[in-house]
Length: 465
Image 1 (spheres, one colour):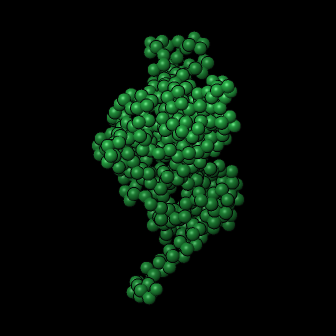
Image 2 (image 1 turned 30 degrees about the horizontal axis):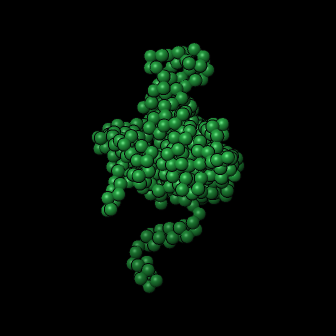
Image 3 (image 1 turned 120 degrees about the vertical axis):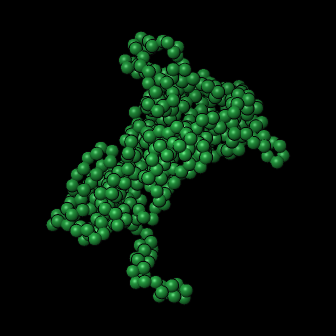
């Protein structure tokens, strides 16, 4: 304490005042100041060409925007550090997924990422997966891999725990964890990387009929997730690939940057990955109409596995006169890819547009520049901040851009680049007898001048998760 008093006695008066105000603000713990949020100092300075030359990877709109906005930073090819804004958005996406998975009876688990080679050899996929597996050996020369998916692990777990009782049926287990794939050519940022978050669900039923019902319920839940994000997705017939099984569908987001080729019927709505059809056949197998080719980004994939894995690990369900092999399904959402794909299809070349539900923050409030003619409106801005903060659902969703050494115009431009759904500017119109505030809606481009009551009314129905 004595040392602190000595320090305060030797600093200049302005520094002492700022120190006192800053301490009071932190202690108050009420207003979230943009200057306190961790972001790279060279925000928005990286040019697209230098980004591509540095990484050596092919880039996409979402990749460029996320790097320039300080949302992610590359660590190594196909691997990225997630910075605070991205973590907030990802956590919201996790909550949205949790809500839908719990809604159909899903139970959350967390399986180990270090998977014994013995399980993969038992299923036959140790060799089948080839170089995609990150393989390693421990000091005892036991082989492992970093899990790209967990069919073996979860089926073995359920089997060793004694199978599934009839009261537990259908059993839906899921997790949201990091996965690893030794991607030969990582590209497009989070759209194709080596380390990524995935939501993977594994279901167990006692009959084919029950398994198909569960399959449809999970697909409907996936549709709910993508609809909540405002994404125009397509559900397509797909190949089962090295996961195997009896049936598979992909949830695709049409985009020029997509690496999957899709055939879509404008008549009946039939859609398929071109891998599942004769590439030369452009007639719809459902209605005979013409199929149109487009590109897509895969954001979800579902498989009806049958007994492929339950037979290997002897995973059974209670039944009379004897236990039955479980009819299984597995279902994945690439969570980091979904985040990047959303930015890819919704944004412009210069501005990020988030799905409103998962924007890192909903509101950015911009007070006037220090020393400007409107500077007296600072107290009005702080009062408006406190009013918005009093709305329960927005108390953790509003940021005050306190960098008042910068012009309003520059801060507005940066706020629009960052993609806050609502940017509220406190300018000269806030000093009138009936204060008005400039409200900019990022995703529609609409600009309105609203009273304090109008602002509150505008924000009261903003959806958050």
